[in-house]
Length: 406
Image (cartoon, rainbow, N blue to C red; front, top):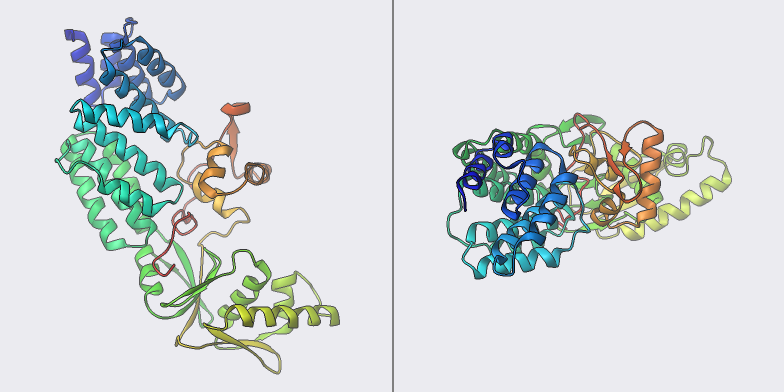
């Protein structure tokens, strides 16, 4: 490796992409193309970076398998940052195996970390934890250690294990400062904001207040009967009943939970569940049917009893009934929760992450764009959607993945 390539690589390791480009910008050999690609990625030109890395991978000879594998790992990281979740995971796995076989443990661990980050994005937490456990226990360099701890914190946050998340973020901050990379330090600080901003609203005995994520964790472990409007389930410390596919039943459960221990008039329930302004006999008949269905669904958690004015919720084991709701309620909240990370997403990547059909996601994006809440750029397959971060928007409780009592 010549001196210019070595100097450019050291500049990139310091987080100085312009210094690297000053040394290799006019060169078209494979090592220079690879370094130019990484530099362009650090500068934010991901399209150009991907093209340069692909040219570099093709330029390396058959005896340079490690260099080619490093290019594939770098391209996979660009795909992850640009939320291209359709990028072939098998190519990354093959590159990781090549790096491990040739003793490049640092880049092999980085490839494994990228696999875990993708699994985390789409809510496959169990698989992410298993993959993370397979990492080489050899202490990595500070930058890799910080990236690893960010993934550990991300899994803990999704599982509402806030103590473990804070510990991982503290380790990530220490490693980022040791690496002396401002961009990495800023990423850690941004991740830490999730634990220090309201993640939900609590409705209890007619009062409303915001909750931090660790307060949500404590609430779910408290034994209270929680009507969870983030996941559309009704849960206590022992079990959970999902009403995600039963919007009318969940609307009734939420109205009863917000009013507890008082009852809810029939006219109010009609308005909340059926959007009806006046409760005529047909509405009352339908309400009786839906309340009967709700009784069946919640029979192990609570009873729904009729009163003179309407209906009331009576928990079987819990001493308290509360409602947990997002701090910002939107019709397309799950889509906005992903876009709130500030990255640009394709509709196909959102469909993978949400477990929804591409057409459903596209329709949601078009509705949000018409309302001025998201914007797109590019056309066709290159079209991306994004929105500035919404202050106080709950990105955690609306993302896929099981909570402690699931």
